[in-house]
Length: 261
Image 1 (cartoon, rainbow, N blue to C red):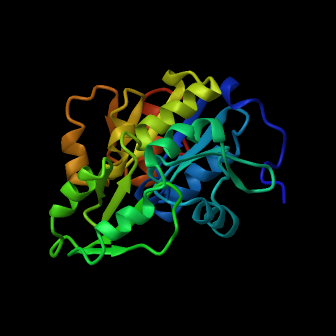
Image 2 (cartoon, rainbow, N blue to C red):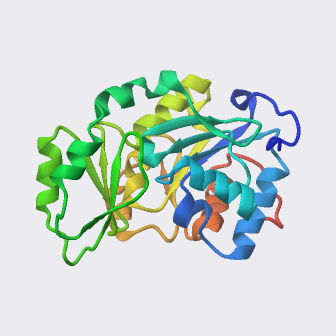
């Protein structure tokens, strides 16, 4: 299987690149909204680059593209910023070692230390996936004991709560924002022609990074509040995919035919 159906120009030479979260953002909105966005991207791959910036792991991303017909991205910032990878022509998400060195060093192979420290902690249920540079939990907001935050900080790591139901433990200073900026610099992209899109608090560091950004219309309230004053952020009315198209058009990042909007 060759996921890149035809040869494409180098991503750095394309007019526009979308760096988007998945759940609630690229996967958000109505069926018609998603189809309009996906078809428009696929019809303009010579001028549009696509990067997924997600809390999801590489296997989930490949499954969504293979089985649910999502446009294949060229690159992925996954696992809440702890994976930086290229999507190869055969449909594999292959980490870029040079960009992950700092992430691996900051993590220091402390997965088991984290799991022991938070074992049985109120309101946290360990997710079964064996992530490389993070530990993630499903969180019950009502029973959650905030002492987990200080336990993580004592280990010299960062914690992140998103959508009021996920608790991630991450390497210090690593999240979506720093990782997407590292990838953009590596690829030689023009920052002014990249649009970052998201909807939950795990997108905050990306949307507040100074890059052009959109908080789609279904964004969680706390994210919207914390983005107040960030002039590079467009607050869309449309939900999910519709909000992405709205921002691209409003910020004049690429031509969009009238029938697509």
